[in-house]
Length: 459
Image (cartoon, rainbow, N blue to C red):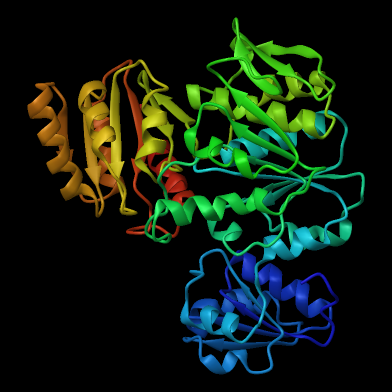
């Protein structure tokens, strides 16, 4: 809700990064804030201590129905499922349900560029932020990544640019849309939280659903999931492609990134050889960022400067170290088979693949076919290992390939085995395909652990 919070009773479900930002924001504006989290006080004490100067009530270990008594607004963190009984009960009582990203967007004085998609949104978000900074614009980057944007709301001015990464979990409960928005792609993901692909796609579509005739929507011309949303675009439809030219947007032609601008002029942004990011999927990210940048009047020169200097985001095909001629690559962000497939397509070198983690009810057939064809040795770990071993063995037998399939308990053992079997010229690639939740808090913690393990490898 966009009205003042003073005197309102606000209940916040979940006390992680977003929940803490919401609690601070609401309490400082005079709201009566109640935080509810399923974890114990012992587990949350450090976070609670950071807000001890604010009058916040905590109800921990449960989400009782009594939380809704007298409540004016229910705010949920990204990790809280939107179908919890308490949330359903709030809707039945007519209590608005929102989250930090929406509350921020309703109050933000600057133009917001919203970016969502099954893959590539963090890289595109970060790159667009660098383009805006290269143009001399004061820029705020956040949302599903980094610091919650609501924490910096009071510092923002109308001439600033905000680049907001948005997940399906956040968008699922939105009832507004940013004036410039992109859906990079829609492929199976998070089907452990969303009941179906239709529900998942519908959540993503909220980034466009509430736009008007003055707004801009950017879709991927090469992605069926993205383009299925074209009929709902109310404003200007722009596209990006690496397979063919588009009439309005960005594309690859003759070894260059090209842009058909809002003005109608066609400009070469830069040669693709100047792009430091590895992989076909990153060409899409670059084109998406260029189309979005043009939509908020960022000059082509600033785009080219940012693209040429951009080295990527942590845990996304991140080059960690080369030891004894073996390069170690951290792609911990690959929490779905499609993400891991994009990583595999980025390499021609012999690959030792570290794969596993926890499943999200995904389909692994194409992944298994590609691994059997391309990978020299796969080292499986985590909760997925049994299923993946069976699937890969079947593919290996059918294709009669030389893939070596190994099983270990966890990531440290996987890195240890990879180090022992790798030869000069090999790539050791952590691109798990599964989530980290069987062993880590998130993909970031898994990626950082991989870095630590690689940095211990002896020359």
